[in-house]
Image (cartoon, rainbow, N blue to C red):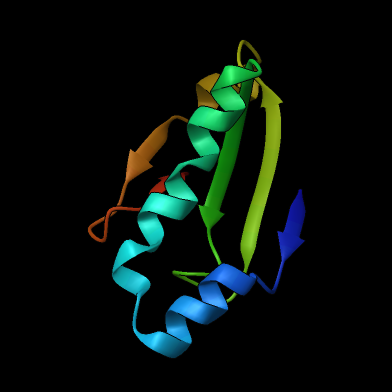
Length: 80
């Protein structure tokens, strides 16, 4: 698993009141991975948490099946 504690885009959005557009930025990571036959697994982003914790697996792996994409009440895609 990879963990980032800083994201320049999220920091800018937090500082200037643009958090409402961050799902558009963060969610685009999912289709980007799908285009290369990957599956992004992430519970948090720097925009809706203090960290961005993610890992990328193959789209046909067991982990991909065990961690389907969901959406939260603020519009962020995430995985359990």
